[in-house]
Image 1 (tube, chains in turn green, red):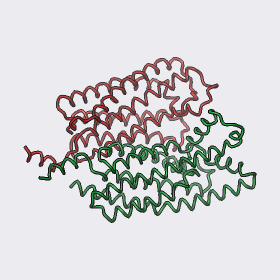
Image 2 (cartoon, each protein chain N blue to C red):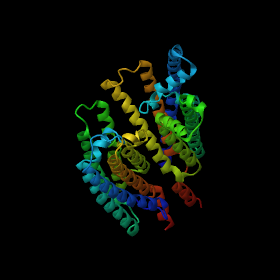
Image 3 (cartoon, rainbow over the protein chains, first blue to last red):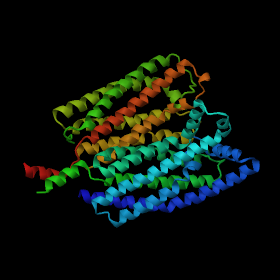
Image 4 (cartoon, rainbow over the protein chains, first blue to last red):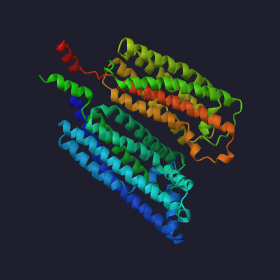
Length: 255
Length: 227
């Protein structure tokens, strides 16, 4: 009974991963188009430094950052690759215990790579914003400002995604980390849910009237894809890895 | 809902539950002090947090939460030690959380300004939904109707994060301290302690649930056979 339930969860994870892989390239295309549009607009106004500053002004709004932040783009192709492999693993060998464990590690590794690359891009963008001051001399206050700017644009989301991914990898190794991994998944899920709610209600009540359609579509696709990615990761965590009780049961059932 | 043998998660959960009542007490004290000097604008928090900090609701809620968390913690500890089962206390916790989450939804509604947009309303109301689902799942888990232990932990963590992010005290990072008064900091502390208390309460419950055994028919059969 337990195994059948786990299998259903594992298949669910596969479907979510596959659906995410369909949406992720759309985000890349939309985001590239949006970035190109913004860069051309900025280039007409001034130098490369002003382009970067303008970019950060555009993207660095704390509330809306997760929706259309440039810092998230470089990590997405890697995420696509990992989740494509995960979807394959889910459908190919879901009956095997080892496949579920590998699924956990794979999902965790994908999210971890995405978080690290996106975090680095955020830092680079924040440094670019304070480039003029940076050349005049580095102070602790400036580093604090850079970190604060990076933090305001999705740093916290990346931090919790990073913690979740580490716990996912650990769940793949041993079942005792499973409850903590699921809890971390819950936190990530709520954060994303709140952002999507903000976007959709913003569309209805007219708060986003000034926003360009391309940005809105990008936000919608980004949130939908990340939702599916997180769904896949949480489902894999729920089904993957052997729990302590499973190990005990296996020991007892062997004569 | 039998406890696992030597479960360190349960012990950690108990610590969290007692700490939550302590933090709630700190919040009660800060709210009491801040109430007399409150100002409508507090740059350290968002609008909701500022409105909540010096209100009567904050005073009543933090005061009541000291008692509620302490009683529930003692109940869970007593049942855990004497019967090694958390079914009864978790059921009581679930039944307590359900009306409280509905009440907090209504309270949030009352705090909304007259010209509040659909966005603010939805974002505020959604904060209480995970707690509602957590309460329902706690009751289900305690009744052993279905094995939804992981789902309970999932919603518990969601609720913990929701209460932590709702009050907007993170705005302290963006505030200009030359414009902030000393009294504002007291108001910020009251909200910070209250949300920390709530967060620790949910985390403690999640840990207690994680420290319980999974209900399994196969497992009970094997145990019976070995006996």
